[in-house]
Image (cartoon, rainbow, N blue to C red; front, top):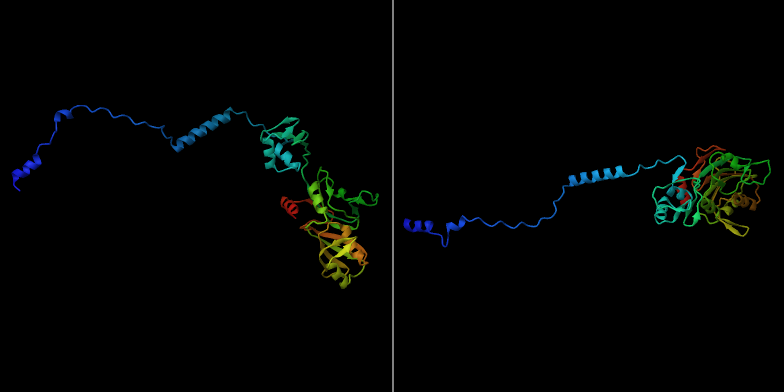
Length: 302
């Protein structure tokens, strides 16, 4: 390849090129449609916080709860008809009236003497109380045994203003665990004959219990036409054979007495040492205590 030829290729003229047109101004490009500018997350958060601050400043200050006031949902829950969460649903749906007026406000405060109507029924807002007593001798659950023996309610007087009652009956010679409550559902539960919770009794007899009678009792027996199931029976360790431990589901002390009288033994004393998982631990004779929340849950599930 010679230099001339190479020079012609490098320096050849451009076809149809015109420098005169290059000096003309180009028309402006059309602007593309643009959406709203995106706000940075930190800026958006600051704006929302400022809006919330202004909103709170414009709101009326929240009224403080007085000592004699209670939230409406708690008032309903204390009456025993439903939980607080369910009470909120009823309130929002307009099914609750206070002193004749429908209330749908969450957190509404009522006084104990206000009239609250829940779904057509006037409520009694009494809080559920559960008191365990280690009953001593010479106190009875009956009210018709004269002045010689005092009623067990004297032993728990001052514990609560609620109208409580004992679960089951105990005569003057029966000692041990006795539960008091104003929870009518629980009282009804533990007085049913088909309840599932166990009670343990220590029974003192007028004479030694024969082993063959112990075996017969362990297999269960029929009393007054009703079958009595005994979960367990045994002699008390390091005690005379007249001291017997008995485990069964009935909370009726009369059933315990009737079992041994059926085999011609006289029952001198009955001491209930366990009631549906509750024991006399750290509860001296004649003393009482409130149940813990967990113990109440356990009783309701027993």
